[in-house]
Length: 309
Image (cartoon, rainbow, N blue to C red; front, side):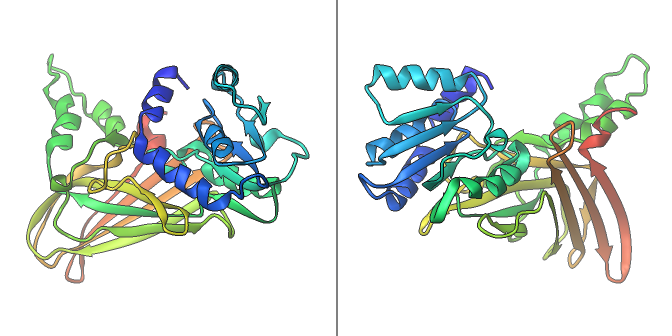
C-alpha cells in the first residue's frame, strides 16, 4: 500500500473524528489496553494513547508500520508494541480490552475485513469492545449516463475492428467513482446486506433488492455504499449524500442499459466471497427487469469475467 494512499487516508478528518470518538467511548484512561489491527501508520494507536490507553499493540505486515514506529519515537509516544505481522498469522496474542480494526474498503469487504474481524475476537478479553460494531450495505440504481459513456468508449476505438469482447471485459468489473446524489434514480436506496461484527461472520455474503419504478427511466448501472457503526451513536457513511471521505462509491455496470417503464420492477442480486480467492474477492451481480408478470431481460456479471479465459 503506497505512502500516497496513507497520505490521503490521514487527510480524512471525517474518518479520524469518528474513530477517535469511538475509542474515547471505549477506553478507560489508565486501565484499558488496545490492539490496533491493520495499524498502518499508527494514527488510531496514537489516538488510543492520547485518550489514556495503558498499552497498545499495533499489528500490520506492511512497511507503514516501520513509519509508525519512527513517528511514535519522534513524537515521544510510548506504551506501544509493534508487531510486523498480519493479525490472522499471530499465534497466542495478548488479550486486550479494546480491538480497533479499520480495514474497510470502497467495497467494504475487499480488504479481508470479514476474516480479520472474525479472527479479532481472540484478541479480546471477555466483555471487551470491538470497533467497528456493525455495517449496512446499500444499493441504488444509477440514472445518469456519465459512467456509461466512459465504459462504452470501446465502440469508438475504430480502426475497422470489433472491440465488443474488450467492452464485455470492461463491464464485468466494479469501479470506484465519486458518485453524486444527482446520478441516482429517484427511488429509495435498499440494503442488500447487514452484518453485526459481534455475531456470525460468513465470508460469503448475498442479498437481493427490488425497486418498483414510479415512472419511466433509464438505468445504466448501480451505486453501492456502506454505513458502518463504530460504537453506539458513532457511525461512518460513504453515501453519496454524506460528507466526503477518502472512500468513494462503487459503480456496478450493466451489459446493456435498461429502459424501464412506470411500474416495472428491477431486481438486483449481489454476491461477494472473500478469503481463499487468489484475487482476494469474488463479486457477482445479476439483474432482472420485470414488467407485470413477464421478465423483460436478465443480465449476469462477475469481476471474474473481466479477463478472457
